[in-house]
Amino acid sequence: MVGFRRRVGGAVIRLSLVGVRVEVPTNQPIVLLREEEGQRYLPIFIGPPEATAIVYALQGMETPRPMTHDLFKTVLDDMSIELQRVEITELHDGTFFAEIELASDGTNYRISSRPSDAIALAVRYEEQVPIFADEAVLEEAGVLFESDEEEEQVEEFREFLENVRPEDFAQ
Image (tube, rainbow, N blue to C red; front, side):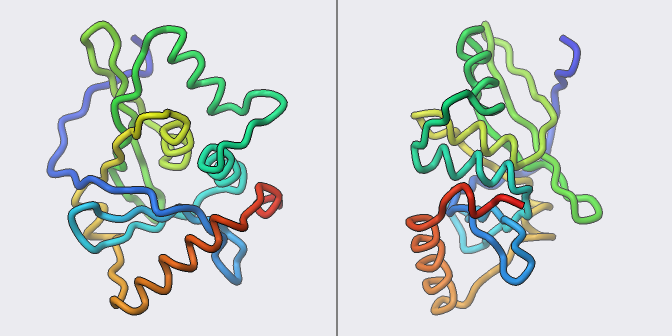
């Protein structure tokens, strides 16, 4: 199939999605991921449309017409193709690269994706789609917060998620 490729990689670390917020003072949205078996966080700057798509899905908001990620999920579902996982594979010159792993009829495929699109697709599934990052990506871009600072920042994210509206991401 055109556009599909297989990848053999090194160690990968499972992450969980903490949320999406707007970084001050730049007003640039970021998605924040955290190691499930560790303390590193992986912040990734994303575009406003992708931030809106992720927040809509996290909050269970429905749009009058399907968004691009909703459309892609519908196509995958109708073709009996399962989204197995998201993997953030590389970081080059400040740009993150990801792949989505799909399964169909016993065959797995990997497709190149922006992390934001891969996450926006993954959060549309009822069952949690696992998110991973290559160890090298976490070594380069992962951050550790001091424990007090960590709790404060996590609480800020929770508060933000409770109050955020998709319009907050409009340019």
